Amino acid sequence: MSQSLEETSLSKVKRGPNRASYDKDLAFSIIDAALMCHVGQTKQGQVFVTPTSHWREGDYFYWHAHSKARNVKGPIDEPEKVCINVSLLDGLVLARSAMHHSVNYRSVTLFGVPELIDDKDEKVRQFKLFLDKVSPGRWDTLRPVNDQEIKATGVVRIKIDEASVKFRAEPPIDDPADNNWPVWAGVVPLKREWGTIEQDPIQTAHYSEPKAPDAF
Amino acid sequence: MSQSLEETSLSKVKRGPNRASYDKDLAFSIIDAALMCHVGQTKQGQVFVTPTSHWREGDYFYWHAHSKARNVKGPIDEPEKVCINVSLLDGLVLARSAMHHSVNYRSVTLFGVPELIDDKDEKVRQFKLFLDKVSPGRWDTLRPVNDQEIKATGVVRIKIDEASVKFRAEPPIDDPADNNWPVWAGVVPLKREWGTIEQDPIQTAHYSEPKAPDAF
Image (cartoon, each protein chain N blue to C red):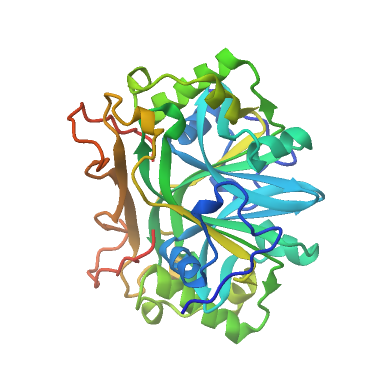
């Protein structure tokens, strides 16, 4: 049975609680299905939202950036509980009234004080986990990382506990009196797929094609 | 010639300034190409990031929510400059070293103190503009909005001026010494498209199929 996330004053879903879940495995599956997240933090009271890539190992949510970048260094220099959202748009929900139009989506919101990963070997292990998500099997084929690169890359993590899931995956729900309103109603699903690979124009040799990820 | 956005201490891009732009038309095109944005705000010092749908009219960026929802009412009750990010992931950039892996993307970051749209007629006009983005021509086919719905829906906007664009749209850029490293390098583009429409199961009549948007 899946464990539950912590439903705190921050993570408790206030709007549309019927679409909320605190199931940890569900949160993990959404985090793993997405390549990008949005990190929210403050600097001297001003909020900043930064898009970035993330990965997960067990109960921990990781991201990286230049070691001096705001979304890695900021919350370490001025410790604060950041807010991270991971969202995947799954479709348009077209109802009979404007009011009941919606989207189908999967979303996780996480809160936590970031922890900096300092240990060199651990950083490299995390780089590999990240690459394994982006293109499985690719790590061992790459030019190995060097000390300067390890130093220049900041890796932080938060524990996935104070968090919540929101999702919608169903047809429109109109006011019953509108159900016979003469307009098409239903869902227009959003499809994502990886397109034809575009080899670097400066590369003339032929190598095995890369594996694309299951995440988008 | 396109106007320029305001390059302030908030909106100036500090990391990767070579990928930054302050071209207003470019910002508009990215805002219009995306259905979803992430609104960052604070409540009693704690940052929150909320995904939502947005639309644009001229120089203004609009979003809506339940009139009591945090991302509409919060910045009105406690006025603050919110930060909004709109991002579209366009592809994976696979380099010869882990360090130079990246993504191709289009991203706009906006700052502004939200302004509440109170006038009833103006709110309805904005609802129509939003619907026109989501499914062109649909508005006039819907059951008209009523007073209760107008009241329950909060609409806010910020002016698109203190903002910046970041984007990447090119092959990997490796350290020159790595250019002959024997691994495939290039871009894996991400494709988005609208799938087969799924009519509401409770609807048995046949109506014209909806128009899908150009935004994703």
